Image 1 (tube, rainbow, N blue to C red):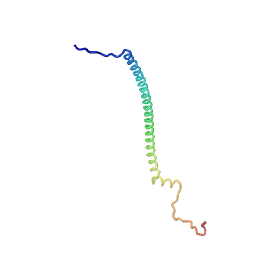
Image 2 (image 1 turned 120 degrees about the horizontal axis):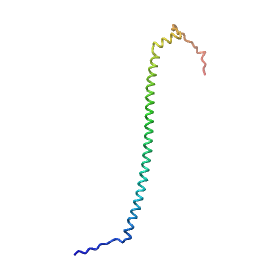
Image 3 (image 1 turned 180 degrees about the vertical axis):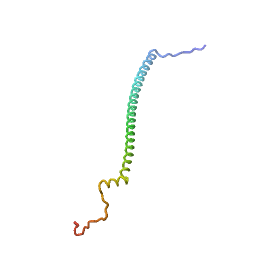
Length: 115
């Protein structure tokens, strides 16, 4: 026959362990809930910031495209205004005359102020 002896923990020790585990489990769930709420709030904040930056980038891209198209229109207008036909019509409108002979002003050395 086999005689086995079983050692049981005292009752006070057995009852003390579940209370301690329950306390630690409550603390764990409280910290977990706080961590989840904090991370969720941080995620919402980051998502909001990312969305606003995306809209700012889209607005900037629209402005850049508008400026490019305006620049092209201005270059076309400049090319039209600088054409030879336009210059000839302006000359005729202002009654300019063709210069035949150019006369330069002669300045003598005695007329120049020296320091």
